[in-house]
Length: 123
Image (cartoon, rainbow, N blue to C red; front, side, top):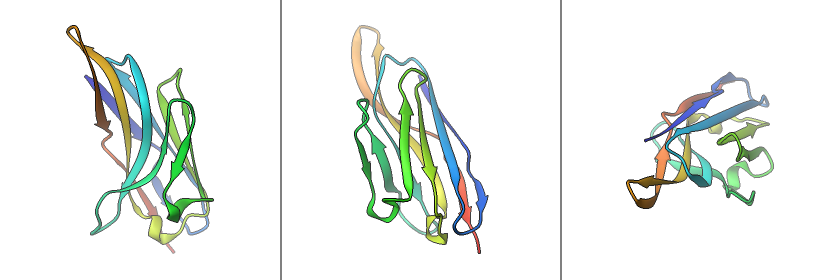
């Protein structure tokens, strides 16, 4: 079993910054793509940013130039530095990871989600 635990959410004024972190633990052989998604009030969950094991990144247009995703493969962590926050960034932010592990003698890759952390940008 694999667990993803997020931290770092909170309240911030427009223009402020927050840093989210997520740590994966459990039966992990390898972690491939990691990412952050968010779900705002009354909205569907959407992609924020992803990063491959090799460090290639992808960002949603609304956060380009403001958010930076990074990871530490040795520690099985992924972080999201969020700068110049605006009220539209208010959402629950979820960590996601594609994890490879053995179930018995079978190697499988499966996606896991964290429990989510609230980010509120208020004016």
